[in-house]
Image (cartoon, rainbow, N blue to C red; front, side, top):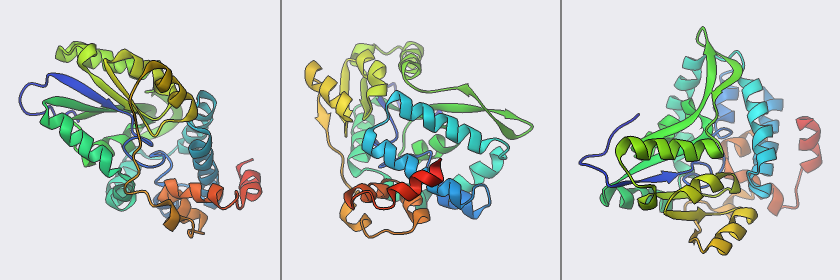
Length: 270
Protein backbone atom coordinates (compact mmCIF):
# COMPACT_ATOMS: atom_id res chain seq x y z
CA UNK A 1 0.00 0.00 0.00
CA UNK A 2 -0.96 2.90 -0.17
CA UNK A 3 -3.72 2.75 -2.76
CA UNK A 4 -5.37 6.20 -2.71
CA UNK A 5 -9.12 6.01 -3.23
CA UNK A 6 -10.67 7.41 -6.36
CA UNK A 7 -11.54 11.08 -6.20
CA UNK A 8 -10.66 13.27 -3.25
CA UNK A 9 -11.52 11.79 0.16
CA UNK A 10 -13.16 14.15 2.59
CA UNK A 11 -12.01 12.38 5.76
CA UNK A 12 -10.65 9.07 7.02
CA UNK A 13 -12.00 6.05 8.88
CA UNK A 14 -9.34 4.39 11.03
CA UNK A 15 -9.84 0.71 11.83
CA UNK A 16 -8.07 -1.48 14.34
CA UNK A 17 -7.57 -4.98 12.92
CA UNK A 18 -7.78 -7.70 15.57
CA UNK A 19 -11.29 -8.30 16.94
CA UNK A 20 -12.50 -5.29 14.96
CA UNK A 21 -12.10 -6.35 11.32
CA UNK A 22 -11.20 -9.98 11.99
CA UNK A 23 -12.14 -12.35 14.79
CA UNK A 24 -9.00 -13.09 16.77
CA UNK A 25 -5.35 -12.15 16.50
CA UNK A 26 -3.73 -11.66 13.10
CA UNK A 27 -0.30 -12.18 14.67
CA UNK A 28 -1.28 -15.65 15.91
CA UNK A 29 -3.60 -16.78 13.11
CA UNK A 30 -0.79 -18.14 10.93
CA UNK A 31 0.60 -20.57 13.53
CA UNK A 32 -0.37 -23.65 11.52
CA UNK A 33 1.28 -22.70 8.20
CA UNK A 34 4.34 -21.38 10.06
CA UNK A 35 4.62 -24.76 11.76
CA UNK A 36 4.16 -26.70 8.52
CA UNK A 37 7.02 -24.70 6.98
CA UNK A 38 9.29 -25.46 9.91
CA UNK A 39 9.40 -21.97 11.44
CA UNK A 40 7.86 -22.99 14.75
CA UNK A 41 7.36 -26.24 16.63
CA UNK A 42 4.39 -27.80 18.41
CA UNK A 43 5.28 -26.13 21.70
CA UNK A 44 5.18 -22.69 20.05
CA UNK A 45 1.76 -23.52 18.59
CA UNK A 46 0.50 -24.42 22.06
CA UNK A 47 1.93 -21.17 23.38
CA UNK A 48 0.11 -19.22 20.68
CA UNK A 49 -3.15 -20.96 21.63
CA UNK A 50 -2.69 -19.93 25.24
CA UNK A 51 -1.77 -16.37 24.25
CA UNK A 52 -4.85 -16.19 22.04
CA UNK A 53 -6.99 -17.44 24.90
CA UNK A 54 -5.70 -14.72 27.22
CA UNK A 55 -6.20 -12.11 24.51
CA UNK A 56 -9.83 -13.09 23.97
CA UNK A 57 -10.77 -13.54 27.61
CA UNK A 58 -8.81 -10.78 29.30
CA UNK A 59 -8.73 -8.27 26.45
CA UNK A 60 -5.69 -6.62 24.92
CA UNK A 61 -4.58 -4.62 27.93
CA UNK A 62 -1.08 -3.12 28.06
CA UNK A 63 0.43 -6.05 29.98
CA UNK A 64 -1.03 -8.66 27.63
CA UNK A 65 0.10 -6.74 24.55
CA UNK A 66 3.58 -6.29 25.97
CA UNK A 67 3.81 -10.00 26.68
CA UNK A 68 2.64 -10.88 23.17
CA UNK A 69 5.07 -8.40 21.62
CA UNK A 70 8.04 -9.89 23.47
CA UNK A 71 7.06 -13.47 22.73
CA UNK A 72 6.40 -12.88 19.04
CA UNK A 73 9.50 -10.80 18.35
CA UNK A 74 11.72 -13.34 20.14
CA UNK A 75 10.08 -16.17 18.22
CA UNK A 76 10.62 -14.46 14.86
CA UNK A 77 14.31 -13.68 15.37
CA UNK A 78 16.26 -15.23 12.50
CA UNK A 79 13.27 -15.83 10.21
CA UNK A 80 13.65 -14.82 6.56
CA UNK A 81 11.32 -11.93 5.75
CA UNK A 82 10.56 -13.15 2.24
CA UNK A 83 9.63 -16.62 3.52
CA UNK A 84 7.15 -15.08 5.95
CA UNK A 85 5.64 -12.93 3.20
CA UNK A 86 5.38 -15.97 0.93
CA UNK A 87 3.64 -18.10 3.58
CA UNK A 88 1.16 -15.33 4.38
CA UNK A 89 0.40 -14.79 0.68
CA UNK A 90 -0.10 -18.51 0.05
CA UNK A 91 -2.43 -19.08 3.01
CA UNK A 92 -4.13 -15.69 3.32
CA UNK A 93 -7.50 -16.68 1.88
CA UNK A 94 -7.62 -19.99 3.73
CA UNK A 95 -6.66 -18.52 7.09
CA UNK A 96 -8.08 -15.00 7.10
CA UNK A 97 -11.23 -14.99 4.97
CA UNK A 98 -13.21 -17.11 7.48
CA UNK A 99 -12.23 -14.63 10.22
CA UNK A 100 -13.34 -11.40 8.53
CA UNK A 101 -16.44 -9.89 10.09
CA UNK A 102 -19.10 -9.31 7.43
CA UNK A 103 -20.21 -6.23 9.38
CA UNK A 104 -16.71 -4.77 9.16
CA UNK A 105 -16.50 -5.41 5.42
CA UNK A 106 -19.86 -3.68 4.92
CA UNK A 107 -18.79 -0.74 7.07
CA UNK A 108 -15.55 -0.32 5.11
CA UNK A 109 -17.53 -0.30 1.87
CA UNK A 110 -19.94 2.31 3.24
CA UNK A 111 -17.12 4.63 4.29
CA UNK A 112 -15.52 4.39 0.86
CA UNK A 113 -18.84 4.98 -0.86
CA UNK A 114 -19.16 8.14 1.24
CA UNK A 115 -15.81 9.35 -0.08
CA UNK A 116 -13.80 8.54 3.05
CA UNK A 117 -10.36 6.93 3.07
CA UNK A 118 -10.15 3.66 5.02
CA UNK A 119 -6.93 3.11 6.97
CA UNK A 120 -6.06 0.00 9.01
CA UNK A 121 -3.88 0.66 12.07
CA UNK A 122 -2.52 -2.45 13.78
CA UNK A 123 0.08 -3.51 16.32
CA UNK A 124 0.65 -6.70 14.34
CA UNK A 125 3.54 -6.95 11.89
CA UNK A 126 3.31 -5.20 8.55
CA UNK A 127 4.02 -8.46 6.68
CA UNK A 128 0.71 -9.81 8.03
CA UNK A 129 -1.31 -6.59 8.16
CA UNK A 130 -0.65 -5.36 4.61
CA UNK A 131 -2.16 -8.37 2.80
CA UNK A 132 -5.12 -8.50 5.19
CA UNK A 133 -5.78 -4.78 4.66
CA UNK A 134 -5.66 -5.34 0.90
CA UNK A 135 -8.00 -8.33 1.26
CA UNK A 136 -10.67 -6.18 2.92
CA UNK A 137 -10.09 -3.40 0.35
CA UNK A 138 -8.69 -0.84 2.79
CA UNK A 139 -6.96 2.11 1.13
CA UNK A 140 -3.78 1.83 3.20
CA UNK A 141 -2.40 0.60 6.49
CA UNK A 142 0.11 1.33 9.21
CA UNK A 143 1.54 -1.54 11.25
CA UNK A 144 4.41 -2.59 13.45
CA UNK A 145 7.76 -2.91 11.64
CA UNK A 146 10.36 -5.30 12.97
CA UNK A 147 14.08 -4.66 12.48
CA UNK A 148 15.51 -6.52 9.49
CA UNK A 149 19.18 -7.21 8.80
CA UNK A 150 20.42 -9.21 5.81
CA UNK A 151 16.86 -10.20 4.99
CA UNK A 152 16.13 -11.65 8.45
CA UNK A 153 14.36 -10.39 11.55
CA UNK A 154 16.69 -9.46 14.39
CA UNK A 155 14.11 -9.73 17.17
CA UNK A 156 13.97 -5.95 17.65
CA UNK A 157 11.26 -3.46 16.63
CA UNK A 158 11.74 -0.35 14.50
CA UNK A 159 8.20 1.00 14.91
CA UNK A 160 5.45 -0.18 17.26
CA UNK A 161 2.00 0.82 16.00
CA UNK A 162 0.32 0.69 19.38
CA UNK A 163 -1.39 2.99 21.88
CA UNK A 164 -0.47 6.63 21.39
CA UNK A 165 1.51 5.74 18.25
CA UNK A 166 -1.77 4.86 16.52
CA UNK A 167 -3.20 8.26 17.39
CA UNK A 168 -0.02 9.92 16.09
CA UNK A 169 -0.27 7.96 12.84
CA UNK A 170 -3.89 9.05 12.41
CA UNK A 171 -3.00 12.70 13.01
CA UNK A 172 -0.10 12.47 10.54
CA UNK A 173 -2.37 11.02 7.87
CA UNK A 174 -4.99 13.69 8.49
CA UNK A 175 -2.37 16.45 8.23
CA UNK A 176 -0.93 14.96 5.06
CA UNK A 177 -4.33 14.60 3.36
CA UNK A 178 -5.89 17.77 4.74
CA UNK A 179 -8.53 16.06 6.87
CA UNK A 180 -10.02 17.54 10.03
CA UNK A 181 -9.73 15.03 12.88
CA UNK A 182 -13.19 16.14 13.98
CA UNK A 183 -14.53 14.72 10.70
CA UNK A 184 -12.69 11.40 11.01
CA UNK A 185 -13.91 8.06 12.35
CA UNK A 186 -12.20 5.37 14.43
CA UNK A 187 -13.15 1.82 15.35
CA UNK A 188 -11.51 -0.45 17.93
CA UNK A 189 -12.21 -3.17 20.47
CA UNK A 190 -9.45 -2.35 22.96
CA UNK A 191 -8.89 0.15 25.74
CA UNK A 192 -5.29 0.39 24.49
CA UNK A 193 -6.68 2.30 21.49
CA UNK A 194 -8.30 4.96 23.66
CA UNK A 195 -5.83 7.63 22.39
CA UNK A 196 -6.93 6.92 18.81
CA UNK A 197 -10.63 6.92 19.62
CA UNK A 198 -10.34 10.13 21.63
CA UNK A 199 -8.48 11.85 18.78
CA UNK A 200 -11.33 11.67 16.24
CA UNK A 201 -14.73 13.25 16.07
CA UNK A 202 -16.57 9.96 15.51
CA UNK A 203 -15.21 7.20 17.79
CA UNK A 204 -16.92 3.80 17.95
CA UNK A 205 -16.22 0.81 20.17
CA UNK A 206 -16.51 -2.53 18.38
CA UNK A 207 -16.78 -5.73 20.44
CA UNK A 208 -15.19 -3.73 23.27
CA UNK A 209 -13.33 -5.18 26.22
CA UNK A 210 -14.73 -4.33 29.64
CA UNK A 211 -12.55 -1.26 30.13
CA UNK A 212 -13.38 0.21 26.72
CA UNK A 213 -17.09 -0.54 27.10
CA UNK A 214 -17.11 1.33 30.39
CA UNK A 215 -15.23 4.25 28.81
CA UNK A 216 -17.57 4.31 25.81
CA UNK A 217 -20.64 4.36 28.04
CA UNK A 218 -19.23 7.20 30.14
CA UNK A 219 -18.37 9.25 27.04
CA UNK A 220 -21.54 8.43 25.12
CA UNK A 221 -19.72 6.69 22.26
CA UNK A 222 -21.56 4.19 20.05
CA UNK A 223 -20.92 0.51 20.73
CA UNK A 224 -21.19 -2.05 17.93
CA UNK A 225 -21.22 -5.85 18.10
CA UNK A 226 -19.72 -7.71 15.14
CA UNK A 227 -20.52 -11.44 15.16
CA UNK A 228 -20.86 -12.68 11.57
CA UNK A 229 -19.20 -14.99 10.45
CA UNK A 230 -18.10 -16.12 13.94
CA UNK A 231 -20.01 -19.25 14.98
CA UNK A 232 -18.70 -20.11 18.43
CA UNK A 233 -20.98 -23.13 18.81
CA UNK A 234 -19.38 -24.96 15.89
CA UNK A 235 -15.92 -24.18 17.25
CA UNK A 236 -16.61 -25.91 20.58
CA UNK A 237 -15.98 -29.21 18.79
CA UNK A 238 -12.48 -28.23 17.61
CA UNK A 239 -9.98 -30.35 19.50
CA UNK A 240 -6.57 -30.05 17.80
CA UNK A 241 -4.31 -27.35 19.33
CA UNK A 242 -2.89 -26.69 15.86
CA UNK A 243 -6.35 -26.20 14.37
CA UNK A 244 -7.31 -23.94 17.24
CA UNK A 245 -4.33 -21.68 16.61
CA UNK A 246 -5.15 -21.46 12.91
CA UNK A 247 -8.81 -20.79 13.59
CA UNK A 248 -8.00 -17.73 15.66
CA UNK A 249 -11.12 -17.02 17.61
CA UNK A 250 -11.80 -20.75 18.00
CA UNK A 251 -9.74 -20.90 21.17
CA UNK A 252 -12.50 -19.16 23.07
CA UNK A 253 -14.15 -22.56 22.95
CA UNK A 254 -11.74 -23.62 25.66
CA UNK A 255 -13.32 -21.12 28.00
CA UNK A 256 -16.82 -22.17 27.07
CA UNK A 257 -15.89 -25.76 27.81
CA UNK A 258 -14.62 -24.92 31.28
CA UNK A 259 -11.01 -24.03 30.41
CA UNK A 260 -10.30 -27.55 29.13
CA UNK A 261 -6.59 -28.17 29.03
CA UNK A 262 -5.82 -24.83 30.70
CA UNK A 263 -3.28 -26.24 33.12
CA UNK A 264 -1.56 -28.28 30.42
CA UNK A 265 -1.31 -25.27 28.12
CA UNK A 266 -0.01 -23.16 30.98
CA UNK A 267 2.81 -25.63 31.63
CA UNK A 268 3.76 -25.53 27.94
CA UNK A 269 3.62 -21.72 27.96
CA UNK A 270 6.02 -21.57 30.89
